[in-house]
Image 1 (cartoon, helix red, strand yellow):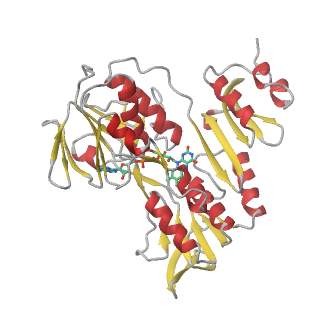
Image 2 (spheres, rainbow, N blue to C red; image 1 turned 120 degrees about the vertical axis):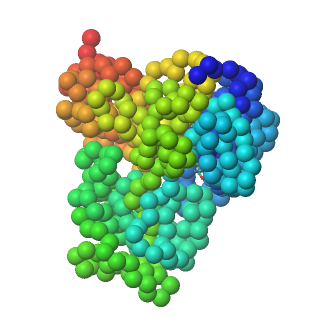
Image 3 (cartoon, rainbow, N blue to C red; image 1 turned 90 degrees about the vertical axis):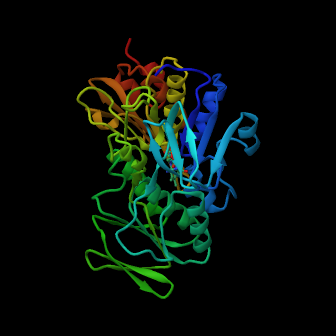
Length: 402
Ligand code: FAD
């Protein structure tokens, strides 16, 4: 698309990525109208604290992307609490659920997704966790509860398990796979977190699914596929995200696994871009397309889209990374660990993933310095001397070959 700093830009989805994009556009000189439309009543906020500090009561409000007054100061129009109902590509406008329409020269879809529900009827004791409101409701009932069942041993399920345990509840995690975090964390670091959960008294039920949720009093009994009955005052489903692609697919853009984008976050329509959790990106010829659900990707995809909209080169690809915090420990992961052909153990808490002798990924438990070094090195994927890399006493940067 021809990029102009005075284009009318509409961002659909006032979450982390949408908010970050609006800030980046203004910071980089966009002067045209900028409208941020969000289904939630809250101005843009980051989600990581929802399962951690907010649920624990350490914070009383989510981490906002910007202070409320900054949006007005930057002349960003916030339309909150009203979802976009349709994207009309030919007419270059979006239709809101309240009947109003907003025209655009460029539209960016930053709609994230919704927590995948369990296939059981709604119940006051059955929760998902995606929004600040979900977190507040979950905390309110958790403070009165004794027993919880978390369905799903992925990142969010385990963070919820950790927080509920810290609040004093007895917690059981039910995971269908043979191990925790099978989707995005390699085996060893996943085992570190499993050990941590067990150490803190969380009961893990691996290779099990919930066959039924039976109401009992004000709570539920989770009946597993082997007949085990787990009575609970509350049940939390952490079984993944359904990307919110409806606007795109109804407008004739490919889906539904995600809104397909190129390296500058553009879709097949040059006037429509997608960022954050909803964007589906092919990493290269012949490789499967992936969605990245992380804080870092919300930031980096927003930054890339801003450059595209302003006609600037979209820059080098960022190394993907994310973190999870459980029971007072933080696991940080970076790179493409699934593509590695060798693993170097660097002490008890750091694993380096190599491909043909080159650094391809890193997993670090409470090892912030090694993680920072590894992330920087991953930008160029250098060859590593395995002996030096395995020695925690040697600075990782000094383990490069040559
Ligand atoms: P969102 O932040 O979900 O924003 C999308 C917004 O679009 C929502 O507000 C939604 O209401 C709105 N929307 C949808 N459809 C419409 C429509 N039709 N019209 C208008 N608005 C619409 N990542 C990490 O790296 N580390 C962590 O520790 C971590 N912890 C997390 C904990 C929790 C509980 C959750 C839920 C996520 C966590 N993440 C973490 C992931 C990270 O928060 C997400 O990747 C990030 O929020 C994605 O940003 P987004 O803007 O794409 O989506």
